[in-house]
Every structure is written in C-alpha cells, then in structure tokens.
Length: 126
Ligand SMILES: [Zn+2]
Ligand SMILES: [Zn+2]
Image 1: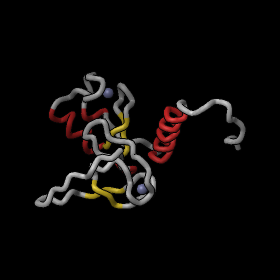
Image 2 (image 1 turned 180 degrees about the horizontal axis):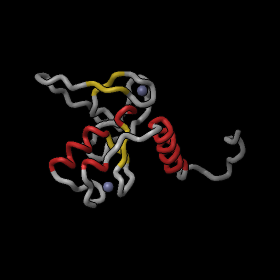
Image 3 (image 1 turned 180 degrees about the vertical axis):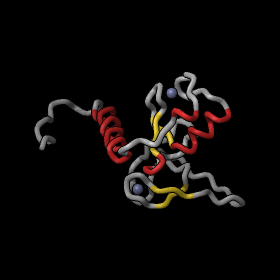
C-alpha cells in the first residue's frame, strides 16, 4: 500500500466524508488519513463510499454511491459489476446505511482474518 496520491494542481478534488470518522477527504481516496481505515469503494465510480449516498445494485447487491450509480445507469442501464440490466429507477439509497456499512466492514474483516492462525479464539462475543 505505498501508492502515492496523484497531485492534480489545476483541479482540486471534491471532498466527501469518510464513512468511519466523517473526516472530509478527497472522494477518490480509499484510505482515510484521519482514522487510517481503508475504505469500501463505490462499484460505479471507484470512489470511496459515502454514508448518506449508500445504495446497492438490486441485482448483485454490491454497494455503490447513489449519485454515481444513477449517473452510470442513466448513460447505460447496465450494472458495471454484474452486467445485468438495471434501470436507474431501481437504485435506491438504503434504509439503514450505517448497518449496511457495519455489515460490509465485518465482511472485510473476515477476509483479512482468514490469513491469521486459527489457534486464537475466545472473546469477540457479547
Ligand atoms: Zn476516517
Ligand atoms: Zn450489479
């Protein structure tokens, strides 16, 4: 993860909030300089996810930012991930973005934990 941020002198990048800590960061940054988390990204744009834009492809359930997904589907009504036909009308902001976010974080954790040794178990239940 030694990727350097690309500097664009002429066009300052728009900022949007980190879904973890609400810190305003450039929308294409996938790691937050404030909370150091790596961020889930929008399937439609590659930008990091924004809580109040949280939506999903109705077909493949991949998360995406509402505005970005709408824009993609209005140009061509096909999900960029699953290539299924999806009308822009079908994309909606989820009812409980924070829950969706937590669920996604859990999934991301699971996939990184698999590499760790399995001998340590115990806590983690409340
Ligand atoms: Zn953050
Ligand atoms: Zn899809």
